[in-house]
Length: 472
Image: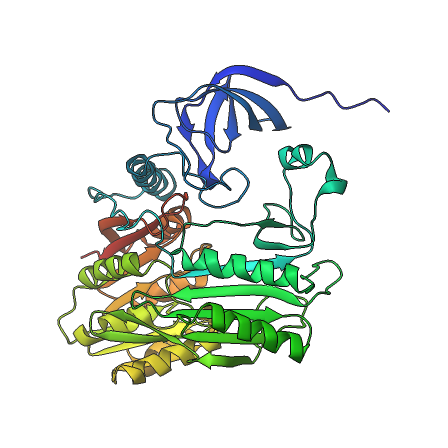
């Protein structure tokens, strides 16, 4: 059997653009090459790692000449962690590329008539903008080749105590995180304390393959009122060790307002179907937006960038253009935050969401805020939103839709067209699938306004809000 031909090393290649998934790109003859962790203007040596007919993938072997655009990454884990891939790109340039991503997707995929697209709304905070982070405990620490070489070989490295993010393309290995600037520094201090406590007391960390080990996962939440929620998931029921650990965390961090724990013996990390126990304080924190207050528990979904969620919702409310007499359908409502945010300007808002627990949160928060003109329904959007539903609850004047990354199912689009609202406000975390759906709506609706919003600095992700008016 003949050996595979080794993939080439390419020297002195200039990076020319930004691509999907946070990667940069260049062109070799007629072939596009996708490269992570570099920026336009960099001149680099590239090792090709994958070769297909129409594209290649590569890694940077050496930066020969840094781009004038390049800036220093703040985080020591840059290049190893799968997040914040654009740290070396100045924030103003990140926004420019995100704006272009929206323009390209709507024009090339949507191919519908567009108004002038509004300038993207940048995030108030470039760092420490998240209100939630999730980390995993693991006895299989992911290590770079450099770290292994520095240690003098794999046998010299303690791999038993990792607490951080799952390594890219590795379900059972965890990159040990010492610093993360996505949340305030309290996240670093709590996480590092837990790792060292586990090490000092000989507690076992979770093994994903064997489904064994005591400490499994960590969820941190915080709000602008400095409330802090810590939820620790254990994979084995060891009451004495658990109580000792929780006591130590409580004494070390008296600022924690909700210290919770859960026993998760399942084969997946989700805790939505598990009982959460309160060791200290409340079982929730409160998020505030204008005159609304939302109880956020350990299982709740809430937009992870609080400040930008407010900016996004203000755009949605303005585009909805309500006068107080409208019936509004809020599709993919989640925990009903948008529905409640616009309820004061509507006659009634009806929210529909697939996840039953999210709908329960929506009902709780509506009651908590004294909102009486909302109704919430749980179920598959295709099955709930149909002609019979519209006949029973009324034909909406406005539809707000905020689907997952895959966009809307074609049956849902057909039902929206049957409902024939005056306006549609389409919120999307994926402008490519949004563009596809706009094309399906184009026969009866025209795009009147487009507003990109950046929710996640240093990543390639961008939210986009589109207003569609019914054609006369």
